[in-house]
Image (cartoon, rainbow, N blue to C red; front, side, top):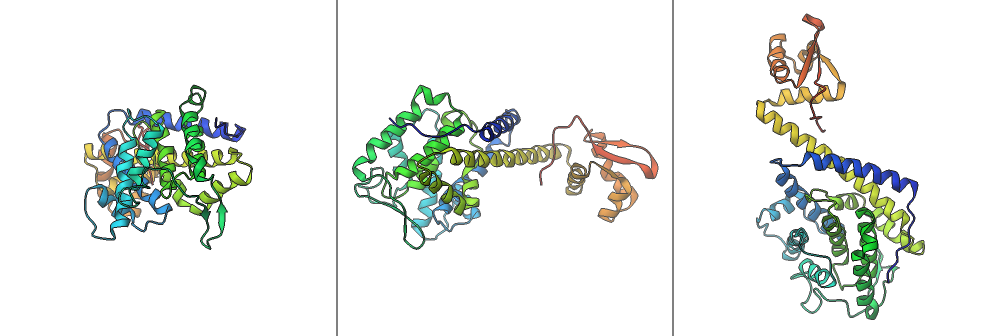
Length: 346
């Protein structure tokens, strides 16, 4: 039976507490709102782009977004198929009723490698030994031999679904499963993509990312060298996963913070649309967010406008209770209303 080695450090406990608080904020902010589907589409494209880019896929985010919309790029088929497959795989694991089993894990690999691997290799365990090499083709890591692969993978799946495992925080389960599957390297190709999909699948299955709006692979792709270094570090430390789990927790915290900012931006955009604010008025809100207070005279100077025009811009914000007007004449200042929950993002 697979038994991962790791320590719940004070740092990890603190980070998980922060993660829990941010996730709670996000869940409250995404209840019955019209822009969640937009955020989901954004996340799907960003995840597909990041995970395939880690493996060297050259398509840009805008090109991946086009493929997600069903458009054809007319480029190299294998490059486009890699992304199309990943998009399909993301949709596949988002099915709440699709449990994590050995059979489904093989099906996931089949989707990832469709039209990229021979049929006898797609969705099948490797039959030859493989190795992980660097850019100079030096061997960095030798995975378990082919004849042991199925049993070790079955043990991992069993560990994921055990009652004892389910009491752990989903981040810990996801991080461990991610590392273990990529270390088993059970397939001829597509091991990295399948492992990152399994990590996401756990977040979905364990009700952590219920709306599918956390682009975790963005974090790994932002510093690929560190990602690969952290994967290898576990092996160098006799498979102690402590630092790897902490690394993943830092990434999740960053992703949640970025998601919160995006939600705040969407919330203010929705609110601005309702009261028909123009771009200058939205910029004024951003300035107030950053400075706390601003004088009417400062607005006139910043935008090179008259006092009358400044008043024309500020009055709708005050009338809608988005900002508070304090003082009079030339000493008038404005600040964000304390009862408004719409802090702007960058």
